Image (cartoon, rainbow, N blue to C red; front, side):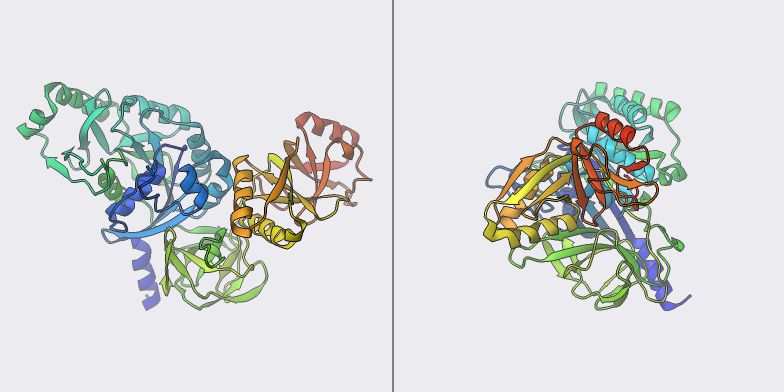
Length: 541
């Protein structure tokens, strides 16, 4: 085995790269903060629903996120814990940002699903879970907010199985009744963990009092009734519950389940230690040359996110790259698949939210940010020139909401175009130009309405452009082609005036229509027209 091979294997074994998925408000950003707290990356965790005087979440860097208390972009965070290097990709918590989340889920090896103990499985969780299921990625469940009244743990297990179609195996079990929990029973280590009183409101790591199950002090602290209820629950789990099977976990068919409260640090360390023990190391990736293992000595990676203006002082643009194989070294030359050119990867960064440091080396599973002068696009492959290939394409989301957007001040046209282009390259919006119209305005398509707010906010704050935005009545977009290959134009298309005829960024013809019924009319009147939800060379998400 070569020295590089040995070094690679050692580093790959240490890596755990995951995303946290949840419905808005289930406590995902808080859990992210607390994992960093235990990893020693921050010493004081800020409460997210912050009072004016408190700090904002470390992972929320964009001003609009701080104002609204939500995550609208995916941050990347890295820390070391117990000999492992952990990369967390914090996904947007708002349903309108499913595209950004989807791309983030392409860059991880496992996912942590956060569920609110009172609300159970919510709509957004279902959507994100489906993405994980399609990719067969292992899912670990953290049932959060145990410091509040919530559903019975057994009911939550049933709900996860019935709603998501995945069985669960509780790694620990809450001690307490009717939402009044005092600790957890650790099933693997046969220990009782009762939590010391939290006087810091979750701002410091909380120490658990650890007991043997037969220690009389346990019954004294929790009471006879609670102790008996716990014994009954454990008996039921042991007799009727699932067997623990690592193969099923790795296939995404069984989820290890942990109970806790991120806000009060209850059960967080227990979860972190259990997770790093079971979570997969960086996995092989699908490419045009077959599966590429992480241990392949030749470097490769792909761009899964582009973000402009993370540092307002520098007006920079970063491309986030997931390293898939080989060893990354600063200033290395790589082949850029889309342009067919060689690129030098200079000034690579690693992150703790908006705090960054220059990195000299990185390994499979790691995420690096590269300053991007405008050469990278989402989904781009970079690899060693001696082994050229392309990683599997990212699926595309069809836009569902549309608006006409133009700069209020025509003198600011240049900044306006630059900002719109930038946000399109980030994948935050999809851009269309109306056939026959001038270039003063664009038609912008998004998956959700909150993206328009972010568009307006960012153009104003990052490009100093005020915009006029008129929402359009369309709800569906269809890419068009004629079967015989002739060009689709407004003149050639019968009923083009029933919607809006536009071109996408690559000059492909697209028809925007009010509803599905209108599609039927168009196909009836243009029998040789082929319609697609996304561009013909892309796969729909």
